[in-house]
Length: 168
Image 1 (cartoon, rainbow, N blue to C red):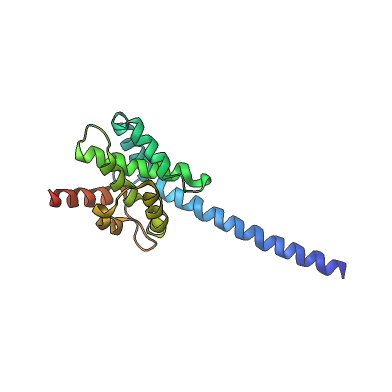
Image 2: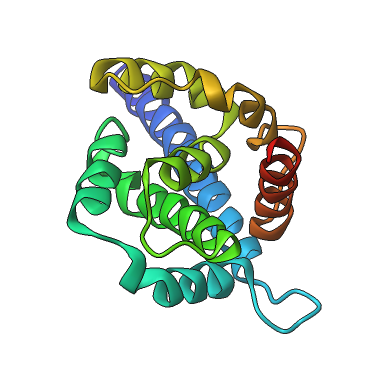
C-alpha cells in the first residue's frame, strides 16, 4: 500500500517536472528565435538595442517615468523584457519621425504596437487609470502582435509611419 503511494507521488512529480521544463523551454526558444540574425546579419534584439541607444538623448525624465508607469502592470519577471521591447518601438518611431524629444505621441504609438493583442484589455485599463486618451490611436491596435501574426520592429514602425503621413 505504501509503495503504491510512493510510485504515484513519483509519477506526479515526474509529470510536473516535465511540464515545468516544457514551459521554460518554450520561453527560452522564443528568446532564441529573436536572437537569430536576419538577412542583414543583425537580430531583432540587436536592432532593438541599436534604436534604444540611438534615441537615448531624446528621452527626457518625464518620458522615462511614463514608460515605467505603463509597464508597471507587467509581472516583475517579464517587466524588463517588456520595457525594452516597448522602448525599442518608441525609439524607432521617434527616430523615423525625426523628433527632438520623445513625446506622448511617440510613447503611445510604441506602447500600443509593442503590446500583444491579448494584453490590450489591461493596457486600456492602465491608460484610463492614468487619464490618457487613446482614441486617436485606435487604428494602431490592429498593428500589435497576436498569436497568428508576429511583426518585426521594422514592419510595425513602417506601418505606423505610413499611417502618420497619411493623416498629415
